[in-house]
View 1 (cartoon, rainbow, N blue to C red):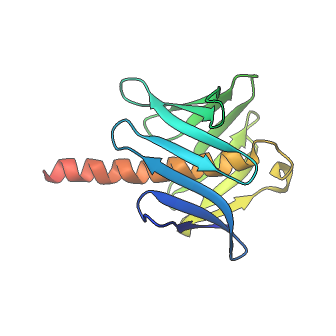
View 2 (cartoon, rainbow, N blue to C red):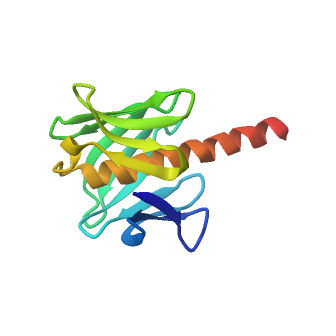
Length: 159
């Protein structure tokens, strides 16, 4: 599974499954008060930052705008995704040298890996999880958010 840029190379992305576009799309809208629309064939969500430093992200169902989970980010980019029914998932850097990230379950078992060159690998145990598509799309969003924040920080240092 790989990612491909969409029509707007900075704001649109698509997931590629074995070379063909699966229709999974991530679309960024706005700059400071941004929101991101994520759409798959089965579901769609909206990701929005909350709080003064925007370290908390809220995930809502796009159809009815009902909040289903929150993600609390740490300064290093890792964090905890909490669903309102009590389920939790941990997003963490699994390789400091190569910048690989992963979603782990509450017992710290890896589920989804985000590797170099926008590659995603899914553990067999995660294939039947109802949250799988959300974890993939939201994880990719977190990677792109970190990239955007790094560019912004570097521009602030130069200016």
